[in-house]
Image (cartoon, rainbow, N blue to C red):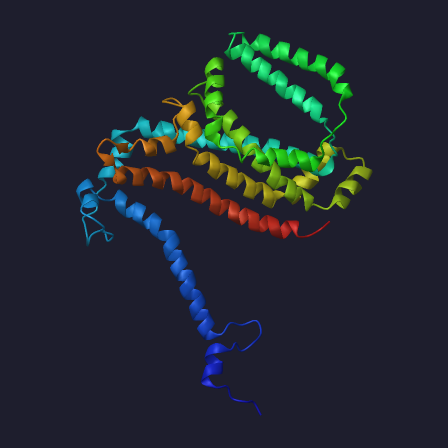
Length: 349
């Protein structure tokens, strides 16, 4: 005879081991609902603020269009019609620089991360110090003595090769792959403001200030350590047996990397690309120093709305919305790709 359950058992105990009790389910949904509200309210606030006139913003918190205030497209008209090219140019600059930087960083960083997991490196510490010394001498020659950078680079390379073939042979202490990986990720500890002025002087000497090339090169250099560190962990999870089998069949290392390793590391590639894209998309400090008008990005345009009369929240809301929408769309696409790639990559062999 089946034993009847009491009211407390019905409310607080699940019927089966894979079920959830009714009270627990209600609590879970309440927590998820509150967290969803916390996450989505800033976006709702942006949309509402973009539909307000300045007088409505200054009157205090009003969140219900058509009830608390009369909606207006004044801010949208100003950003897209009155500003016109002043909005389109920074937007296109942001898209171009962010996508180019992310793709280049992921391509180079993926190959470097794979090399650190499969190839044993033993660079001598003294040789690295000689290279750093040579670079410093080239920079001093260009900045302090006005030497042409082409001559400085050629002379520096010749000097480095000479030192490497003579003095470099006497060095004994070597680094390992883990030391190289840690050194690369440690570059992210350095505050960007500490190096942005030397970078500014460097690009000024090369005549690359306020260009897409300057932003792309700097963004790639800044985000490359993150790509190497993340992709190194993803490549570690790829079975070495597959590569050894392909190698026995005559496949080269490059063919193994592009046809076997990369398809299995698709979730890592997608996640890393998304992270780097967000970092490049929202970068402000580097863009502030290296661009003025031609290569200006959206974060600078948003900051420019803080005028002498104070922050113009209605204009800033419109700009932030058009900044957020593409990233959210790319995130949704890559999230599906990551999920599908995880299921594919879970099948070994």
